Length: 610
Image 1 (cartoon, helix red, strand yellow):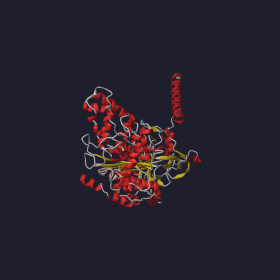
Image 2 (cartoon, rainbow, N blue to C red):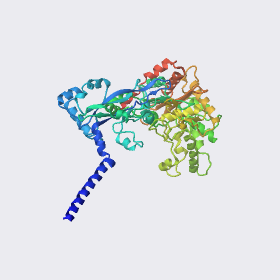
Image 3 (tube, one colour):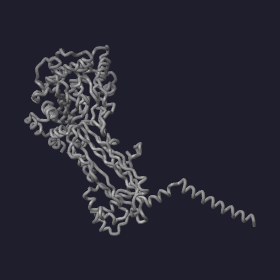
Image 4 (spheres, helix red, strand yellow):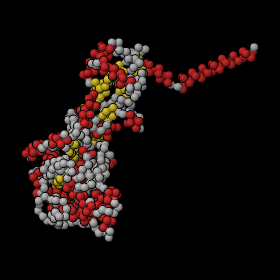
């Protein structure tokens, strides 16, 4: 009997110990139940911070914040007694309500206990219609947020846009700051300076009773945190110059980039055709984005950073600098315009020295210059000799920033292409090519590809007589200058400074009495170079790079206009009008401005595309 009694006692003790261990585990080790209990009585309200504002270099506002409201739903609490009345109050059809509920349940973070967006980005006006009746619908809660607003219809490619974070970015993040449904910069400066602009979110915990009615702050706000606004950015952009450039390029396809040579600050950045950044905000974002994406003119394509073209005759300036550096060219070197040597050339005085070759953009002259760079007779095998000369040429050319990505503070920049010897070995066979094989490079054609911002940077290099600072868009962050160390590095080319003055004089002669003389601006010493880029798909492209004034330059600029013909006829007047606008805040040549504004290459392109 005592044995049976002992067994029963052991069983009771064991059960008791089991319960004690389990209770200890639940209460001390596992906080899941505590969290679920808190979820029943607490509601966490996220306080989203204001993103930093963006201004131009003179303090003009470029980007601000617009308040919007999301309506969140907690499915476990949601009660809709009368569907018709609900739809009337929310301005929905029954079908739209069903679709919205299905979308909520398909949300990647869906939980019946968790708030999920039901309606997104309601304007203040639309939310005001719901604010006084929302109490009638348990389980529906407002969430205030902000989206971006733009006082001007410019700079879409620079400013970029924000949007809801996707799964790829969520998984990729290291600091685990973002949650499903958060907004993040997806392009432009919004993406590049996301950490500076986003600020830090806050949170507020609110007590609720068993019916879900809010009863005030939890623990008197001891666990609440306040949001911290993002930092404001001052950009390098001159809004007036930007707007003028966009106006000039209104019916054209191409780009303009203007840089302050002494600092690398980007003054204007036009990609044409462009788009109004206000299209990519609010509830119409997806619809508008799709329309822009389907546009045959590709307005979302960032041409100054991503379009790669042969540079054409503006590249002759770089060829002349390399020729001087390797010792095969002097300012006094004279060649006639012998068109049996190379590509056809336009009518101009001949023969010419180095300055004259720039002034009149003589093609045969640069056939000889490039040939002498490549074939220096340093090796008895002409193919090996060409490869040696080409490698020397390529090394110097790449010191100008060609063939690699300029470290610009915008995403998705392309490097262009300065072909390697391996590139030509692959096409023609190892040691099976020489100067005559690649002679198109002498006038900036052939396999050579450069993006427009690199062309403008070349103008800055010549303006500085041999160096450049990394082009960039942001002057200051918060109340402090943008002291990014990379912006202070003086990038010197592999060409000695002493070889630049003759090129500067030659470029001045282009505008005073050369290929672009009709576009000169009285009272401003402009140094420029025209280019006409052969285009196998249609009319030639028009390109012009320049800087001004000649001494202590304030602006270096390049315009590239697709299918616009001679460089002197379209790109050159655009550039010189932009220089006039920037240096004197006026337009002294109204007839030339009207001439540019009358040009329409967009309509021609659309007809061709159709």
